[in-house]
Length: 262
Ligand code: HPA
Image (cartoon, rainbow, N blue to C red; front, side, top):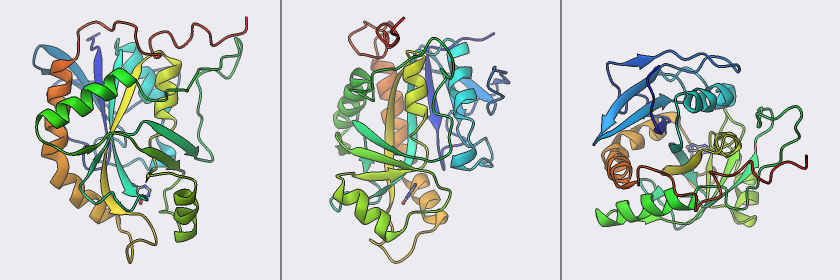
């Protein structure tokens, strides 16, 4: 089977990013992910997986996150860059802004959030929930191209598929969260459980509920088309700039080392 060490997981409006002729239909013990494209960025083989399926047919709460992340693991992926649409809770953030979150809070309700349902009991450390090395590279590459990014933000992940209520958003703001999305969790957790480096490039598609008159998926989609060139540039430059081998300075690569009592 084809191999790739780097993967991009695309979200809303990014289903066709880096689409290539070569599609892989991968089976996993956790089910079947959408077809994965393999292409080249510079001299790197990169896997591209559209999170919601290539025709955007799987809602956020029904995405088979385990099949998606496990399939990439099977392809030899060591680093994942995820793309997510988010609503802004923080009033300083505006539609079109790019955000590289440094932390998240999980407000999902009915998702399978682990590969370790059985022995050995496994507790991965999430003190640094996103790969610090990958985040730094993303921020630096974006800034080198004169793009403004919010380099620190807390993302809250909700269950969806409905948007939040104004009261929920007000609660989230009081809790110190900056952006809200429906797909960041459990993807980041599952990647860590397989010792894969993971970071997210988010784009603000709307002000969250209660901060604008109403919310529609169309505006999320429209903004995604607008920011696509910027995000593509960040992804391409970051992937080219990544060292070929991981050096083990981040917590991701050895996440299982101290995660088990026995
Ligand atoms: N809420 C949840 N998820 C989202 C939003 C939002 O306002 N915008 C884009 N994804």
